Amino acid sequence: MVDKIIFATGNEHKMVEIRMILKDLGAEILSQREAGIRADVVEDGATFEENALIKAKEIAREAGKLPGFENAVVLADDSGLEIDYLNKEPGIYSARYMGEDTSYDIKNQNLIDRLDNVPDEKRTARFVCAIAAVLPDGKETTVRATIEGIIGYGEKGSHGFGYDPIFYVPELGKYTAELTEE
Image (cartoon, rainbow, N blue to C red; front, side, top):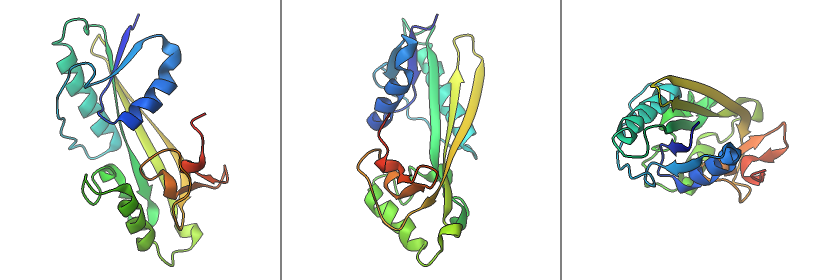
C-alpha cells in the first residue's frame, strides 16, 4: 500500500489542487520540498510527457535516498498552454515564457496582443497536462489530457492562476478562472 506520494513541484498553487484531487487516496501527499528534496531539475525534454518523466525520475532517485520514503510514489507534471495560431506557443515553455519572473498579467496581455484582430475560430487553444508516475518498484508511466478552448480578449475570473484568466471554454461558457475548484 502506498502511504506517501511526493509531487515534484515547488508550486504551492499546484499543491493545493493536487491535494484536493488526491485527497481520497488516504496517503500523505507532500511536495518535493516538504519531503526534504531540494533538487533543481532541468526540464530539457521536447514534450510535456518527457519533461514530466524527467522530473519524476530525478525526484524518485532523490527520494530513494531518504529514510521512510522507500515506498513512496513520485508524481510529476508538465503542463502548459498551446495556442494554435501562435504555432502552439507558449507550449512546453509556458512557465518560462517571457522569463520565469515575468508576471502572468504581462504574459497574458502579450498573448492577447499577439492575437489582436484574430477571429474566434482561429484563437483555438488547449491546456495540456502530462502526469508521470514512478512507482516504488521502478515502473514508470505517463498520461496526457487536454481541455480545448479559445483565447479570450481580456482577463476574466478570480479562480485558478497562470493563463486561466484568458482561457475560455465554450463548452462550459466560462473562462477557466471563472470555474470553482469543484
